[in-house]
Length: 173
Image (cartoon, rainbow, N blue to C red; front, side):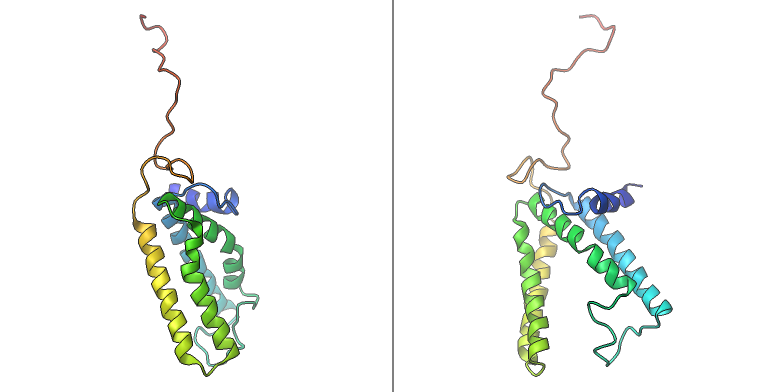
């Protein structure tokens, strides 16, 4: 099945491949399978480990608790970043545009950790992260640049063979 192949190729063959281009279908099918697997691990964490989804205790779940969902998240962090980079390359943009989402999100986490009373600044950073994710989403739904760009050939276009076409065997010349 082609959908599963996009996911397995990204995980096993392009784990840290930040060069080249990724088509829309390659990117979105990877994200779909990854989201389904992540949701499955969250459900398994809840059922098996009896971890509540919503809690007032900040120590019950953190980013480093050894749960299936956290293991999945950390294991797919690099391939997710790599495929997003290749998708941005496909529309002619730098992979560094991911920072539009990452920097405000990390800033909100740091500010919340350092100064829990500074809610307004955390909200501003989170709004900036939302705006960055909207920009990235728009870039990920637009079509590929036609032909080759500085990041490589268009993944949707078949490579052109420079050799002249040969007549079928036995055909009159």
